[in-house]
Length: 171
Image 1 (cartoon, rainbow, N blue to C red):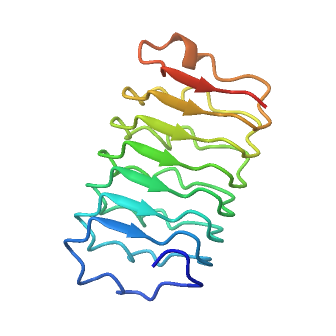
Image 2 (image 1 turned 45 degrees about the horizontal axis):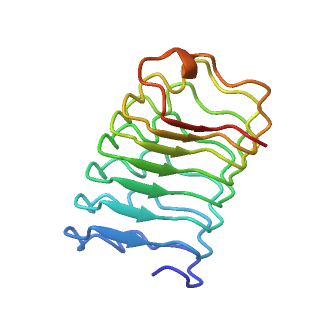
Image 3 (image 1 turned 30 degrees about the vertical axis):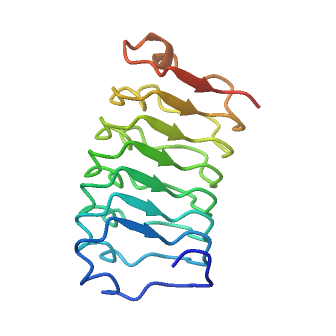
């Protein structure tokens, strides 16, 4: 369903697709997601929502996606992330949040992402990061913070025993 002109997703549209493993909704014109739209997709491993026009996300929209390993929200118009948005995504390995519009992140937004290996926060308007925002990312290997408005990265990135192998912080 990617690369179409979808403006919205009706409630229940995916209810009978319980075995679905990959869903590409990228490059559409989605402006919002109904809260329960992905509730029955418990086998989903790959979800692409990049290049849409999403401005906000319901806090529980990804709650039942416990098998998800890849999530892209790249190039949307998100202005904030609910603190508990990713709480149930304990299998997530790749999270792409590049090119959105928030200036800060909730301190505990990534706390349950213990399997996360790659996190892309590049090309945002982040001016600062909570000191302990990355502390629970024990599997993190690649962190992209490039092209933000940061004056300094959180010191904990450099002092944790689980520091990333690759860190991008250039302009």
